[in-house]
Image 1 (cartoon, rainbow, N blue to C red):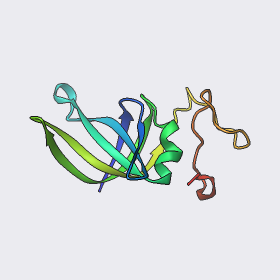
Image 2 (cartoon, rainbow, N blue to C red):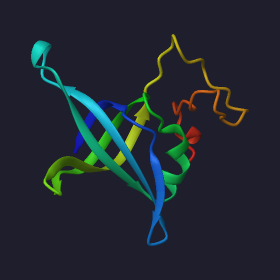
Image 3 (tube, helix red, strand yellow):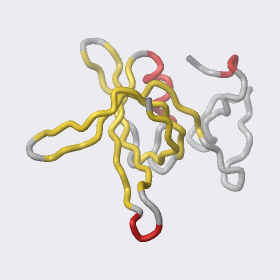
Length: 124
């Protein structure tokens, strides 16, 4: 299992495969230090009802802490990429740019995603 702080590289894509929801999200994190630092891209998938519920929050530039499994290199048409299955995540909130969520109001495009500090707050 991989646990890593990552940034979402582009808005997640929600689609259906065999009647199940599938969320695809590309994330990036840095490997190396100083002048040797370079980005490492990871393409993740999440399945089922949880994927449908979180898709709207997985937008480009957001930082999340991921828990991913089945990490492997996949080759397609001569290109290789790192792939995995997203099994869990936590949103990272930046207090200088995001205000505390209002639990009585549904999330909108102008509010940050809700904080899941309490297990009862998780929407899935």
